[in-house]
Image (cartoon, rainbow, N blue to C red; front, side, top):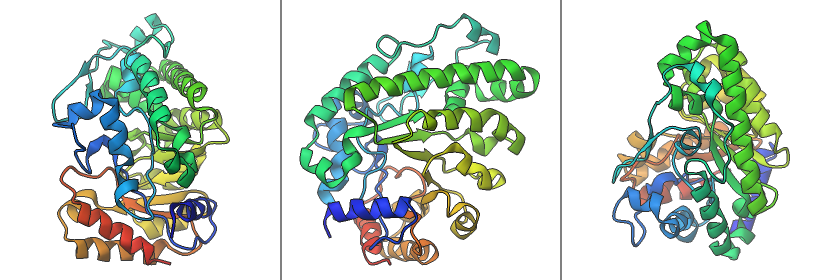
Amino acid sequence: MTQSLIYEDFLKAINHQQPERVPVNVWNTRCNLVRVPGAKNLLDYYKNVDIKLKSQVFPLEHFEDCLILPGVWPDYGVVLEASAFGSPIRWDEDNPPHAMNYMESLNDFKKMKQINPHEDGLMPQALKEYAYMLKNLDKKLVKKLDYLDGCALVTGPLEVAAATLGHSKLYIDFYDKTALVEEFLEFITEGIIRYLKELEKIAGELKLVSMIEHCPGQITPDQFEQFAVPYISRIYQEFPNAIGLYHNEDNVNHVLSRLPAFGAKIWHCGDVDLAQAKEAIGGKMTLMGNLKPIEVLMKGTPNDVTEASKKCLETMAGNGGYILCSGGGLAPGTTLENVNAMVQAARGGK
């Protein structure tokens, strides 16, 4: 099977049609799968755009019949947007960058100006890197996976708000400063959309918009409806022709049936019962996951991975709507043999 057929199966899966074979995705963020030549540590990945590009496309060059979602993008973990909104960034040699809370109170947001992606935080560098990555991306890979030259990944508005203000302050303000929280989230949402539109000027119309947003796993159903749905959905709505991907491996069973309200086609899931999720939203969102990244993919044997993959496929393979993947990002130290076992299991799954 060629990658072009894998892409056809990907489109069938996200449109809830029966693919020839269940697609399998390698969620290879943060250079966790392999240290490509020149990368002594994780900091080299974030600081060197050539290493970043080589790391992201590595699975396509070493495994047959796999996808790479979220694709090719200027990866700065979850700190890019927070940096543009004023958060200082802490850099470590072998840990992802960390955005530091800096707002004393939510009232500080009233003094902020809307971001300019060409001037603020890490965004100017990210835009330059994106142009460079697309210029140097092997066109043969784009021919195999059509979305590769139009990928974008952002951190969701709640997660950006929590990075700048602090989770505890934000969640208290849900009760004490409700209207101001809504204003702040609207402000952040507008900034995220501005950044995505600048990426679109570089790539042309975006084909895939992915969002990392874990906060819905930490709030009540009512807060989910008030503070998550309106802002997350607005971002996806701004790019109606792009495939929307929502990444959250937290436990969201308390809002499971409402996740389709975001408007994303794919949910990259982790701590969820796949059969329960399929029953609740299987006709509305494609589920992607949920092999345990540490217990199975990092610590298990290839046979363990194969057996766990088969269980996922047995539950989810019928009628499309499923992509086999790790339930979250790959853990550092995951072997190529174990990733290949996941890929091979999907190749044999119907």
